[in-house]
Image 1: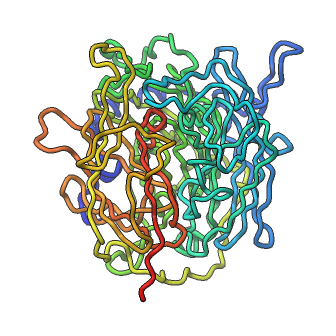
Image 2 (image 1 turned 180 degrees about the horizontal axis):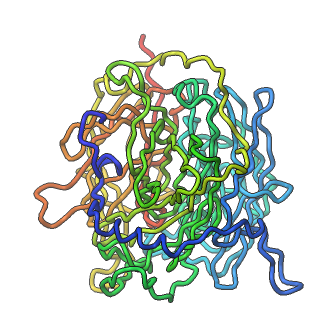
Length: 603
């Protein structure tokens, strides 16, 4: 199985995941609490007459899982107008949403390699007094909570405020420049006219699942956690994996949000857990049991699954139907460990792609599908897999199992996401993959695993309290190249942290010197996982996000992963970021920049 034992390290890409069967078995008791419920209406009522219209409505808990609206390119072009809004809830939380002109939320953008995307984004955010940011934790006085006094160029402003926004097209290999995929300087304000993103999908972009979300440093977590995210699909997966040709496809976006019932006691169906701990971010801390209060609630396609009873959403499909599920973890800080249960028994899921890249099928990798019974997804990651639906009368449950995030991490608990029910009258999904297709042409570049790296670098994650004398002070988060002094990310810094050359391939060894799980992500490129703490890994696909196991006091060395970084594509020329994809950590300083320079012409 990819050249090494298929265990927790593989499923979470080399992280320390709690694999004990006991917490998971106890999760099965939850199923006795669940009952199927129908769709309760796509738009919740606004409540008091005359109250402001909720621009970011959500389905009710227990609703059927809706399909996001599909927007498809026509004649090689996808053109759309999108606006971002926020809405303050009665409980003090703030929702964020992307809207089409007709009010549709978070459409799925579908394009082919070579297509042109023209997206006009209008910033309709309003000041939110609940938005606060610990400037001491960021270490720089470059973040404010009010809009700029005068209108400035959105391409160069770099403004970071509660009402600034931009777009990052996560996973795409498009240039890190304004109007394409720059997040360092591009900042759009409500006073600006609609801002146009315009770029072509590279012809060699792998077919698969990508996504879009805001990336304003200091406020990424708040906007993403509020719901500002959507899927982007590069068509043609059946050309890489013929087994999926003709399959109905379902897009599932899992998001996290502040607890709807933060003061509720855990469900009585759960075992008694140790006293609840809170981390310095104010979230429920990891208690090591898989139960108790989670750090965040989850939703699936915006249907909330709130603590403590976790009433699942519902998915209905035809009996024994085979489908392709494309699952995005759009959470701000929550790790997922996905499993599909039929009558409490985990089912086999056939992975065909990770992070938008289909499994490699040439050389020694002769199979295009890897069958597993649970799949780990760090925040920002995606997985595409074949699933076989249940027969009539067999209850199914789509769940996420507990993840051990370390003694300093959040509490990511066992919980249900959706029931899966077989009905003959189930509706046909809105998208089905083509049955007729030509195979993808062979890659024009050598397989990354066969390339000798130009150089090797070592980086490491670390944390410290802003005030060591105050145990309740904020946490400072760092990612540092070995041999350099840890510093918080400075968006105004004139020099990048790392400089390399287009055409180079590098090995980056990423260590975790903290007692909390972190997820390494880099923009513009994908990488190949080469080893886990010195143990060789043979993965037949590339990633853009990977877990770095946390450090324990009894370890002799820091846990690490070795990544082969691919800077060969000319679209990587420019300056872009790498960071922890737990967005609270990124906002708190755990980010750096890499500048890819043009190669020197040989005389």
